[in-house]
Image (cartoon, rainbow, N blue to C red):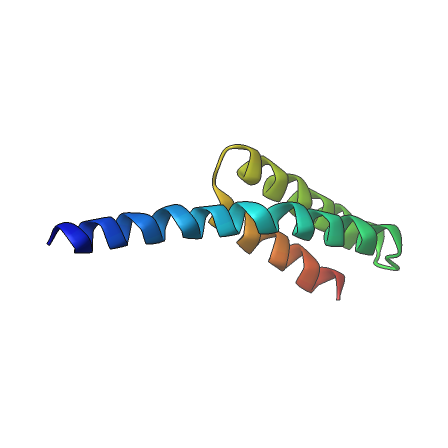
Length: 78
């Protein structure tokens, strides 16, 4: 039982670290695509809002949310 608890806690710890590491890479991808984007101004504004929400989620430690939001921004950018 003790091993199971340790295993579960380790999984949670390492999965959080993995998400934390991918946020900056996703932010960079979004920023690059925004720079080269040909989207309409309204759509670009929505993408920038998502990008800022993703950065805020990353900074507050909500890495899974950040990844989800940033991936949505990338999807909208094409």
